[in-house]
Amino acid sequence: MNRGQHGGSLADRAARSGVPAPPPPPDPPPARRPAGEGHGRHCWVHDPPDAPGTWPGLLVEWRQREDGWHGRVAYTVVGVHGPVLVEAWLPAEQLKQG
Image: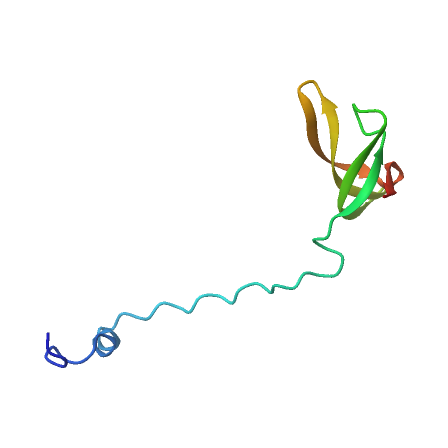
């Protein structure tokens, strides 16, 4: 293949074709997270539904609702076939810093 034999480079021919170039890709989301997000924190979960007692947990986030603050936690309880991972929103009164 000889360069220039067919009317220029591929880029030149594409530019003359009349087909618009695709839009540039969007900017990637920022890598930085707001303060306090994305960092789990150990806590103790007291008397969650269907599992009385105190269980070790990981506090994932807080949310304020009409009836007060609630934490989204992941914790394990003993199930019939071994440990079971539970994720739930629980009132702040049931969560203690670990």
